Image (cartoon, rainbow, N blue to C red):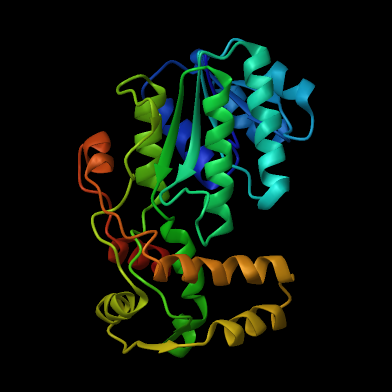
Amino acid sequence: MIIVTGATGKLGRRTVERLLQRVPADRVGVSVRDPRKTRDLADRGVRVRRGSFDDPTSLAHAFEGAERLLLVSLDRTGEECVTGHRTAVDAAVKAGVGRILYTSQMGAAHDSRFQACRDHARTEDLLRATGLPWTALRNGFYAASALQFLESARRTGDIALPADGPVAWTGHDDLAEATAAVLAGEVRFEGPTPPLTGAAALDFAAVAEIASRATGRPFTRTVVPDDAFREQVLAHGAPAPIADLLVSIFAAARNGEFTAVDPTLAELIGREPATFGAQLERAWAE
């Protein structure tokens, strides 16, 4: 069995779909908080079991019989995130999982300026301590995050964000394809993978040029002080921890934590990853 957590999320669902192109459905299982949201997968022969990162017993049952388990990182930060991951890792050990694969991130490090990367580093420590075979998929920074940052610029034509640095923005579709290949056993990595990135690292000045070419409209890049940006985020109703998290992305980018570009993702999927321009055009057309 190959078990995937978070199978209703952006990366998890895409990974399951690509995995089903590689292995029979009766070899695939999903662990989800609400099985009702995956009835279509059950109808196709996928094993669906309830698994909550806040309920260790449910996870041990959901992971039962797993030769490989994909642990999709939680949409939480700090101690709450690491505690949830620890619960899942302990459940995997209890269930006798053969190998744990974890969706980490490029730049994962204990001294990262970005909280999520510090959480990933701590989770990799948990995996290392199990004694089980494990793989940390060091995913490139999701291009979907850049597109979210550009939402207001779609209307104004001005990309008004804090000072940044080049980031290897990478698409969910390409990462899901690569993840499915690793889950299916087509290739194996021990410990952290090389950065799984798109072919270019771009700052938002370069993104402005791409948006201009894609739309035929002029886009400008305005640098907003970190404090002013944080106040804007708070004014839109975000809680302070989220505002701090968003600001830290730019601090980490300025520190060069997301600049690495590596060919491993292209090798795994057998083609060049989608460019940021192509992803922007598709997203804005939708």
